[in-house]
Image (cartoon, rainbow, N blue to C red):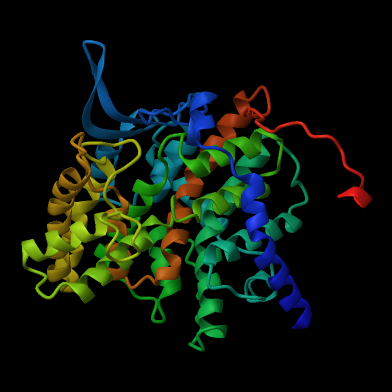
Length: 451
């Protein structure tokens, strides 16, 4: 313990030294024309590549000017709203849309059947992997647990470094298929060893969809309704891909361009997604609504809710960050198409689960938040809910624990990562290597005895 205390004393003492050494005058970023976050002052992303996998639309050009419009999202040229309409109430869509993103075309019935069979066969982990890897040193941070598992799976792959498209495709399908197991088994180990609860390790059914298997493996009795599985299936499809410019997908392409293997690439993408500014946002939405329930006396009073939201923006409530979580998006202005699609299914699930009061509260905040943000910040370009606004609420209705919210996102997004990795391998020419200008001053070396 004494050694650890010495380290803590040292880091406490020298933390300020790091701050002083690494601080850069903020005005220099403008002086050097640095587009921070790879975005200009208008929020437009720096063009770093081309993709044929998906596209986002948030503006239209009218007379040479960018005009905000209702958001649209395409997967391989298909509007995501049309894709969801195409499979909802007919079949589960995860595997079908995964096929589309990876291979570029919607599958025929026979192609889809073959693909489902292959994915089902891939839902297996190496012998004793759950016992020897997942159950050792379990963590509340399931994203870290998944990253550890992915990197360890590399040790079982004799062709880990083979960069051929056929081999990378094999590795990708294996990881897409086993991600639900890595996430849920990781949670079960944590829930048992750290929370002193019962542990259930249910094997997936190779004849069921990804959404059905997630609920089957998570629940003690393995039971779920068709509506529950369908809503989760739609959530997975809507989170599967979102352009090449998001943080974790860009990470996927950067690490791929360095020549790294599939396991290292996906581990890096997981590490990117777990951040609260990216995949962890839906957790903050749920926590914010819990805080609303604690601090607002009448949840049906719009004035009370509006007052609370104003306190959020003024950094006087919840985490005092000045944010209404789930509202606004870096790209979309008028609407996030994923959220618009999702809302109708959320209402159906809320009715089935007896959570109508909660749905009314969410709907009220959805209506009032843009007004409050516009008034407080004088932002009139439009602020709408994003897909994270309702996804956490859905997961809570599905009895999915908070620790699995971001891993569920990862279970979906690995499909997009895999498609972008393959596209990068086929088209890449050079390692992605951004530029940084140095603003340091040159100094004369001083011998140790003279310092």
